[in-house]
Image (cartoon, rainbow, N blue to C red; front, side, top):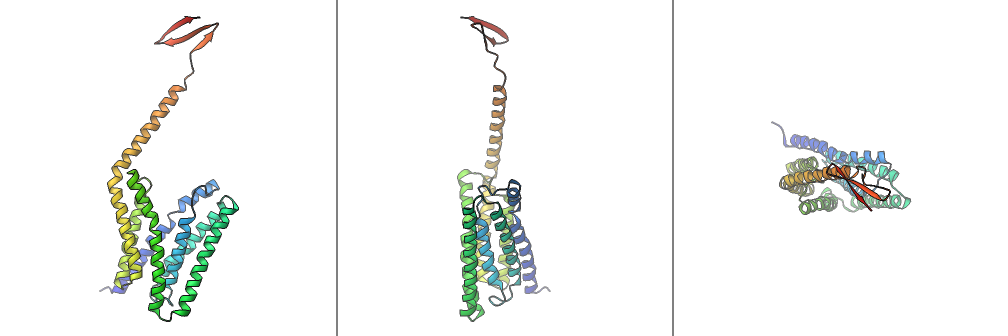
Length: 265
């Protein structure tokens, strides 16, 4: 019979794989940035938010804070490395020193915050339960802040009745990620992993519900937009024909229904 710890480990490995997929989902965006040589209107905020989230979760999973959480450290440590690569690419292709300096300062503030948190927790809190409680509470707060982004997208979906900018597979992967990590946390109950991932599962379920509700209206909007584009192309092509009205010696000749009418001045 498979032990509870073995099942927990398997779930943690599956969670690592799904989370890695989510961390790598912005890669097409950065390929586009690399090809264009500019970040254009893209914001660094999502990557900075994910960076600090991964850093505090890595701290939480360390043996001196919360023993037995190696799989939390592996995926969040990987997340830190991936987000740093994204931010470095953002700095390389950002327009203007002011924008680069702003991103660097924000990243520096995050690193100092996590370093101070680690120092204070390890020196002032002398038990695993107290350290876990302090860092775990910080983790939950940062996770809740990160849910503001999906809420903004859901509000846009309801307003426009379109799921065009809410990718199905990303919502589905987020649901799977939330379910797996919630199950992982429930086997050896960990409220600090259960709460944020439970909220993430609920958020993803709402996204999929909205997707099912507005899928047909989205397809209708896309079809109408394509029809309008086609119609405007027809109008443009029709209007680009050479003007056959000419003025010759005070007389204008205009084709009318296949015949020529001449009006003399």
